[in-house]
Image (cartoon, rainbow, N blue to C red):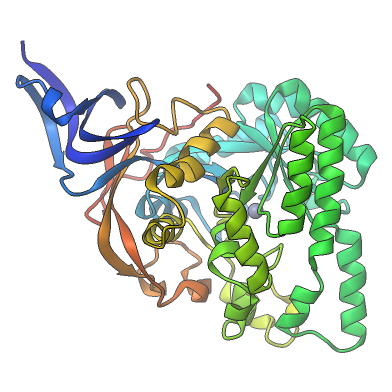
Amino acid sequence: MQLSFDLIVKGGKVVTPGKVVEGSVLVKDGKVSAVVEKDMMPHEVDAAEVIDASGKYVLPGMIDPHVHIGEPGQEEREDIPHATRAAAAGGVTTTVVMPNVIPCVNSAERLIEREKLFNEKSLVDYALYGGAGVELPENIVAQAEAGAVGYKSYIRAFNPDRKGLICRDAGDLYIMMKEVAKSGRTVAMHAEDDPLINVLIEELRAEGKVGFEDFIKSRPETTEVLAVVRLCEMAYYTGVRLSICHMSSPRAVEYVLEYQDMGADIVMETCPGYLMFSNEDTEKVGAYAQVVPPLREKEKSDQLWEMVEKGYIDYIGTDHAPGIPEEKEMGRKDIFTSGGGLPGLETALPWMLDELHNGRWDIQKVVELFSEKPARVFDMYPQKGCLASGSDADMVIVDLDAQMTFSQDDMYTKGKDASLMYDGITVKGVPQTTVVRGEVVMRDRQITGELGTGEWVTPE
Ligand SMILES: [Zn+2]
């Protein structure tokens, strides 16, 4: 009997849960039918399309759990076409998109409205965060019911543009976390103590200290540790599932480990920037290296690396948040007037592949950190995050021997002019071909897919 498929990715080293299989991935109707070892391949098969992956690794598509795309309301920073082409170029087949746009996502209605924009324009699949805060607690559970895979929340002062995304203190956290716990989803939180940062900024300003190094001084590790401890204690108390975003402080990681030992349901994210760079790299680019929390001392990024290697960090998110060059330029005169953010969608996986050659991790770990674990934390596994029968046929074919040099001119993100930080970095390990539910969206480094190919991913 002739078996027929839509797509066969043949002859690669396929990274499946638990092992690397030399063989083929058979795809039908957007799903993985089977991963078949080389000598087990039946003779009577055909497919509408066959991709030869000999000599290459075939990974499940990457899932970026921390992406800022400015639609609606902040398209000048990043829009869906640019961001999702960047995603495809970086082997990211699902973006998990943050709610802090204008108007921000703080209700089921806004979530649905925003979904329509992505449905029309996204090249890759997407999942949406809802917003959780103390101002609209009655909207929290409804967003999960409407399809949000998790929530984002901040501890800082109220801001009309972020209504429903903010908690000011532990009392607010209590109200927000109790509601999120009812939904069963994860709340991802920014962890920096704003009142302390504001005092430190005032102090620095009063002394006329407004250079880039002063930006780093305004957000010492203490500001992160304070916020992390408070969040952990409140997660422990309320039983909510908490993810702490962009961890940059090794001391803060130590505290989270203690709470995990006590049984609190807490996971940790870090971003490529905190491992790739330190404050030593930022001298030539100034505000272009401005992210929050800030890039810290080399010693800290070395310690963070050790913590990744020990398995303390659960997953990598890019915090893709392109800035605008004019805004970055303002930082030359006064760093506290400049805008933060660094793109990351198209650089993260190549950089992670490059680190394979430095023995930092193995290919399974790359998949765990940037695909499997984000899918699990945000309730998309095993539809996403693995190559197994029945999973979505999201794949990235990577060549570990090929090299590429990051260049602003070649980037797809709308924020490429604010991507100085990456310019000229050469990595060994290149995503060559990206497949979303059986559709090729990048072939041999060329974007081929149609905008609108992407579908909404809701919790499993
Ligand atoms: Zn972010």
